[in-house]
Amino acid sequence: MKSELFASQNMAQPATAPGMSLQNSKSIKYVINGEMHARQGSMIAFRGNLQFERKSQGVGGMLKRAVTGEGLALMAVRGQGEAWFAQEAANVFIVDIDPGDSLTINGRNVLCFDPTLSYDIQTVKGAGMTGGGLFNSVFTGQGKLAVICEGDPIVIPVSQQAPVYVDTDAVVGWSTHLHTSMHRSQSFGSMIRGGSGEALQLMLQGDGFVIVRPSEAIPHKPAQA
Image 1 (cartoon, rainbow, N blue to C red):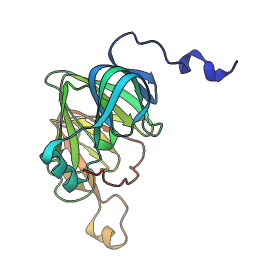
Image 2: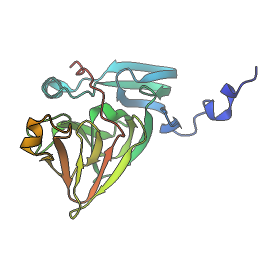
Image 3: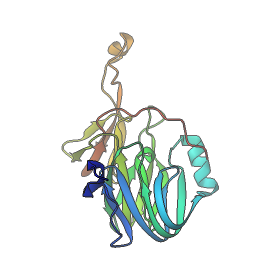
C-alpha cells in the first residue's frame, strides 16, 4: 500500500528515551515508566500496560476550581508504555522548567507534564473581580510541561520601562514574578457610547515575558470538580 499518509514524518518512531517529546507540532509522545499527568480526555492513543485515573486535587483544589472555574481537570497515567496526547489540533510546545523557575499558565493551555513539577491554582494579583482569566496555574520544580496554543503564539518581552497590556481572553501565560494589575484603556464617555470592545486589559510589569494567542479564547464550560 502506498500513500503520502505513510510518509516518515507521520510514522510513530520507536522510543529512544523515557519522558516527553514532540510527535509533531500538534501532539506529544510520552514514554511512561511510572507516572505522568495530563488533562482529562487528551489521550489519543497508547500502547503498553497503562492505567488512566482521575487525579484528585484534594478538597482545597476542588474548592478553588469550583469558585474560579479553572479548567484544568487532570488525570494520572500510570504503568509502562507509550501514550500520545493532543487537544483539538492545537499547536504544542514543550517548556523545560528548571529549579527556581516559575511559570504562570492558563489552565486551558496545559496539555501534560512531568510528575516532578508542582502545580497550584493562584489568583492573578491586582485583577480584582473584573474580566476573565483571573485564576491561573503556577508551575514550579524541575521537569517538562507541554503547553497548547490555538494558532501560533506571540511571546512579548516585558520590561520595567515597557509594560505590556494583554486581553485576558487571549493570554496564555507569563513569567510568574511579573507584577499584574488591571488597566482601563477607554474613557467613561466611550463606554456610554457603546464602547470599543477593549475596555480592560491585564497589565504586566517587571522583567520577563508574556505569551498570547492570536485570537480571543472561545468560552468553555467550567470543568467539574
